[in-house]
Image 1 (tube, each protein chain N blue to C red):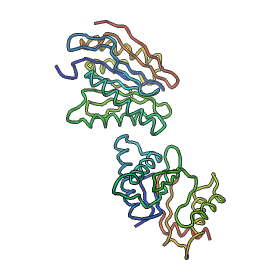
Image 2: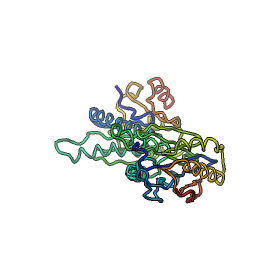
Image 3: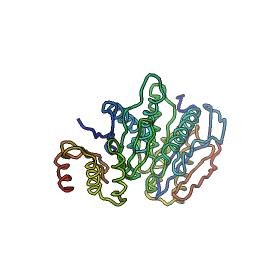
Image 4: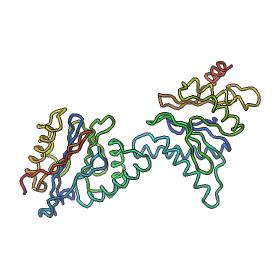
Length: 204
Length: 174
């Protein structure tokens, strides 16, 4: 079994009209055994910037802590929040620093940039950025997620519709993957508010 | 070989003091600016670059076996917070200015600027004011051969004027 599949994960981020959604599953496993059903994979960096980390759980947590550290320092030095594009470059840099002994993580970054324009991107474990206009996926269920998102996605969805789409795409995909699932966690972010929801699906 | 140099495409610097010392600082600052870009893929904000340059200067006032830099710097740049001007002293302290002067005749020059400076000056007016300020303490005849002028506008590109352009401004001032 590959190191990226040791703990199991599913992540998706989707762009809507002046909003974005980022969602993950909640399973933490040790290979085939499920060990926790409330594992957090999507983290807030600041009000308008979220990062989801798929892959090895220990690296997920360590990388998150390192990134929060860097962002807090940036906030103190520059007296402003990091733009999503800047943050993505930072994550890419941090991952490439460990080019020959990498973090076994695949990040999914989603945020509202200048003028509250939604920004999403993903990268591989050594920092190769991949920008997208519609959606990005990561984790053991990524192939299913690609399919589900491709068919369910529409451009410029309003927040309510985006929430439904993301939730359905996530649930459908993790149901086809034995290593992810056990619930869902969705953040729906608009310029004025953030809605956090826990999904209940097939608990297996 | 110029006194006014650019640190990034949108930040320039001029010094008063020992030329060789300023060259060392310019090199360091340029490298720091590029490192910032390499990390964040974003041009360094003027305040950050000034802060880091000042930190270097401060280091040399506290480390062993070195002497402080014999220069004061005027750093001018244009970033997301608009146009900015900073003065950095050998001690490593830095100040934000709307208009400033350094070197010979500094007190007269500052008094002159206090009278002449207005918030809503256009770039051309600013150049004229700068030339007049220089002229105050100038020994000999002022010409495009013995002064340098650097400008940065809303295009966010710092550049040093050519002697021909300097001559044009000098003619306007007369």
